Image (cartoon, rainbow, N blue to C red):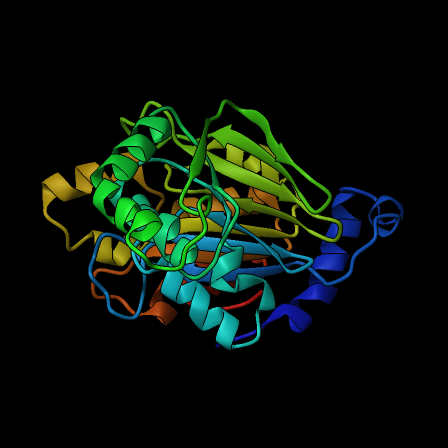
Length: 310
């Protein structure tokens, strides 16, 4: 696992001062037990890459995890991060998640997130925040697993009576969640024909983090970053795109962000660190993709991999 937190913090501090974002006086007045950790649990796409699980990002503040999306493999990636020292990602701690949109690659880990932590002694209900449709999805999952729930509750297996429950919140743009660790703001992004697709802005005691979700270049991402500490943004390779069939080019250009477009967006958004995720390579290398972005963007940028920590 690559950990770049210590090397990035000085750059982020300088960027925060230059951009005139939330003052250090305000941030330092809030008690921080542990620096905020960003853990990439999954950086993948619908492509079945065994080295990249489905999209999921964990924001861990004071050993409390907040997940964004739950693609396939999310719980086991959290367990792997816990084994590597991220204490907040103990599986039984996974009880809050935010969903950018309802594409299958971002949500097929939902049943896993509902049931596996319960089996491993989560007692709290899972709280999920997402677009219209998340309540229906939740209800169907619980109905589909009714036999499993009944056996675990009444079939003699030691179990608690609450950890399988889900409280689903259908959100609108604005502040959707707030506690002593984070304020979470949702904002609409352009993801092709999706009526509701969201990005999220996390404000913690020591960092501001923006996650794009899947999207075309969206002014809302620039507005919500505006010198943020970390911007985590999807991207596809322009060189790889050129090799795709015409029908897929039409799709990807209408739903996703190219390396050139992301360079232009990041130049305007001015993050302290740009992290690429949900990368579509189509035969190009990670180094090639970074070169494409750096051709139009002079800021600090890295290509994220599963279990990277920032």
